[in-house]
Image 1 (tube, rainbow, N blue to C red):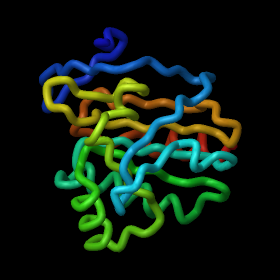
Image 2 (tube, helix red, strand yellow; image 1 turned 45 degrees about the vertical axis):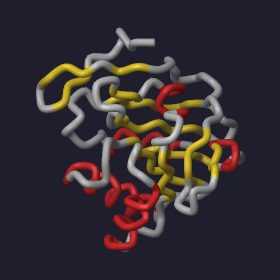
Image 3 (cartoon, rainbow, N blue to C red; image 1 turned 180 degrees about the vertical axis):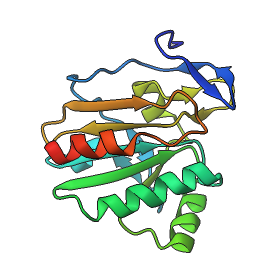
Length: 169
């Protein structure tokens, strides 16, 4: 289903976002992605923790790399919180990137196989079969507390607002 409630661009050109609609206050839908060992990883695996989901198109771009570095730095400062970094990159590329950058505080997950996360949360860029950039924060009870769909994919997310929310939990 096309998202008509979002206006997202990439380098100034409109893109079509597809998938479900989630809202602040909703129970977070469970999803499955691939972990670095090609193992299934579910949101429900992190039950009882606050979850920051950092969504981005590809680790092979400067903005996405910066986003991962920033969330990795912040993850080390958060209590009872896990940071899931999700893209459609293959797990091999995500592992290579994290190893090269020394990123050990985030959990990279690949949505390339089924787009399960992207479809349920409405982050799929139809034209590219990539995820648009954004952030979702889920509290320990499994309730969505924050959602950002970055309006220009080549811009970084609003770290300040996301961090204020996670620190308030």
